[in-house]
Length: 524
Image 1: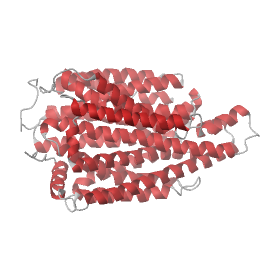
Image 2: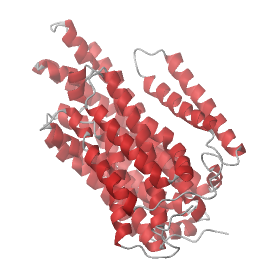
Image 3: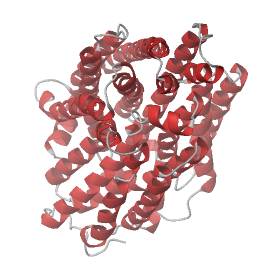
Image 4: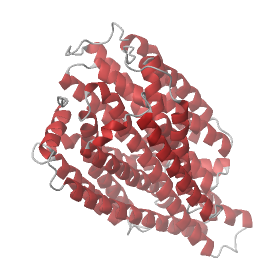
């Protein structure tokens, strides 16, 4: 059912809808913000809680893992119980989980509370976009609203280190999570009056719990295997086995969706070739960007020796880069095809990543910051135009499903990037520190330094810190090299996929319309 507060078709939105958009945009920004908010806090919480390198990866990864794993399920649930109702329930859960996270006193408790944050965030992410589509019925206004939403989503992760760094200079690491409490309080207070309720009248029947279980199992098993491939404490057969089982479960999930009358995800959208090209591209791009962003954030603080607030300000260039790239995309497609803009942007990101492979421990601060900002700028058109292509290619009644698929691709890509590049860099660090002669240090200090750069920094010994900084930079170089290889492969794949594309004109029109705020008329 639609409440009387929902706008009629083609009715222009007024002050109430735009004010509601501001509330939804801030909530979206906060959900994305929590992806990167711990990048600069890792050395602090490592020293405070005694988290190992493996635990640190779980602390950073588990939020995005469950966020990506639950977003489609929560989108379907919102169709049935009401999107505003689910959004408000999620806001309560997010605020409570944020408080629990802030006051965690052990690595295990922090991992658990971050997992709860991921589940709560998954209720917020799809509900915001679905409500925007319901509030803004005028095509041009809806396009502008979705562009603002997308900017918050894609730039939110980059603002996490900025705000987190400033707060870490004045408060303890857990304070970065308390930002969510007043934001969600505003959402709960303003939501009932500003946001319309909406239930999809065509969404009938119960949610298929088997599909929910299959989707979660596939995501968690695959990522568990990837993140443990480089871990010393995990056998290679166990990691590979987890990945293989996860892929089998993913196949079972897809086959089940094709048979169900009301599936969790509408896979019929993947019949369109342009969507099959754009979704993997966004997954790869978000993975390369997310994984290297984690390393550069830690580099600024732990290697360049900047304070948390200074590190946050240095990292603000990354947020500005992705915002500029996303906002410039609609301008670019006025003079070139969207495919060309996407390919050129990804090529620029690959070149910037190549610079990071040569980074050293001294005199490289500006080079590292500039490089990751260019990487962010280059993937901006991919995210902005890619989202426009996916959502714009779906008829209105399936726009929510298309948006969920697009969002899942980006979230899953970020999770994989953090897991794969994080594990590779951690393996390089541990290997180099294992080869270093640390016999002059107490065994407890040496063991801690071999695990993480935070452990070495906590010792206060200049010699040990220098060794750790060199090992961490080597890990950054290797992670960047992997990202370069992936992005170059992506560029080649895009060139081959877009060559002779007969739908190019249609895609250009769709992307231009999405960028200008006009939604294309669905094909009949």
